[in-house]
Amino acid sequence: MRQAVVHANPLALCVVGIAAVPGSLAVRDLDTGLIALGAYLVAVLLLTPSVRYALICLALAGFAGLTVAWSTWRLGGHDEALAATAALRIVVLAWPGAVVAGYIDPTRLGDHLGQNLRLPARPVVATTASMQQLGALLGDWQQIDRSRRARGVGRHGGPLARARVAGSMVFALLVTALRAGTGRAVAMDARGFDEAGRRSWAEPAPWSRLDVAAAVIGLLLAAVPLALHLLR
Amino acid sequence: MSSATDRTVKPARYRTIDLVTIATLGVAFGVVFWAWGKLYGVLDLAATIGYAPAGALLGGGWLIAGVIGGLIVRRPGAAFATELIAAAISMFVLGGTEWGFTVLVSGIVQGIGAELAFLAFAYRLFTLPVAMLAGVLAGIAGAIYEVFYYYPDWNLGHQLAYGGFFAVSGAVVAGLLGWLLVRALAEAGVLDAFGPGRERADA
Image (cartoon, rainbow over all chains, first blue to last red; front, side, top):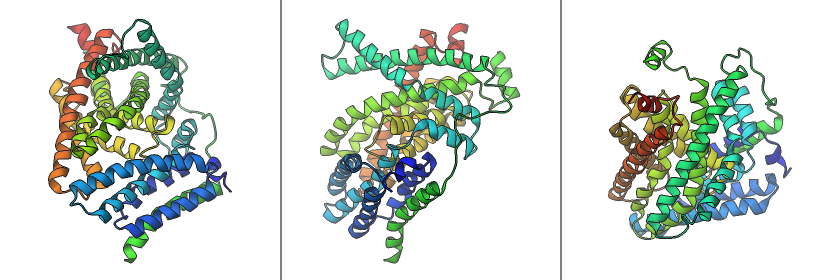
């Protein structure tokens, strides 16, 4: 049961994360917020394998909530209950999505976007293919950083000097990435990417009962604050 | 000239290199967003302790992907797609765990804002003022979403200040810096297949 989130397909997980966004809007008082958060907490304990990961996400979302609470208290009339509600709303908004995002494999998501949602194949495949370059890009970034350090550039000086170095690193990264992208586009077209009439996909993108259940649970969880709000 | 004729024949037809470049920019800016997020967290905290709406002065950093995508690829939807992919990458792949799916919503909203500026000029004008307008509209769109979701309880004056700061930051960081970055990329010779690179070759 606790492996549910691992086996659910990426679209079903997206439903969970996206549903939380409008759902959180209904958090307009402390009780609603606490009950909604409690419902998500139960779901996390029952359906995700790593409580530790979920708690790290909760801590991060909680911190974001605290900053919002502080500014709401200062700029919204020094009302403690209002500030606490604002913090809870942020946690209910962000936490569920943060947890499921950790279980979404972007490549599988690409398969599902193309086959289930019938999004145009070329943009989906081009994006998924470019995502494979992410590891290489991160490597490039480290290499740019290291070569700069070896030449004694960057990593010291004031914030402005550092910002300039960061800017030139971003530029170098973009040049590398765009060059690689041009090459990739030519290679893809050489294999008939542009003109293909019939396209095959790397993996099938099925909807199992588990996926339907995951999506429904996500919608129900998001409906908790809405229902409480309407019942009041 | 050939590009202009191509576009009158099939206005929205993307070449493979357009698609790959949008995705590549999205992925590269996803990495940049991820790095920027770390720095942003610290600076935004400082702003929050001081005067929270001023934190929006840093918001322009999140808008730059859409502006650059629109400036380079120059097709309908390019700005929106670049911003959306960058947001998705920084969220799914790199673990933008703090804000969950709001990152994706922000990307959609800000991407629409930037797209509107290019649409307003019918995808024919890609000058510095258009780039800055794209940044401003992306900033305003982002601010409306954030005020609605994060800061609905602030007093109206502070909410408007937040929008104003976000718009200014969008104009300078996303618009001006983005435009300069595209020009520099064209000079580096990596945009030869796109409008900015062709203009450099013509000049």
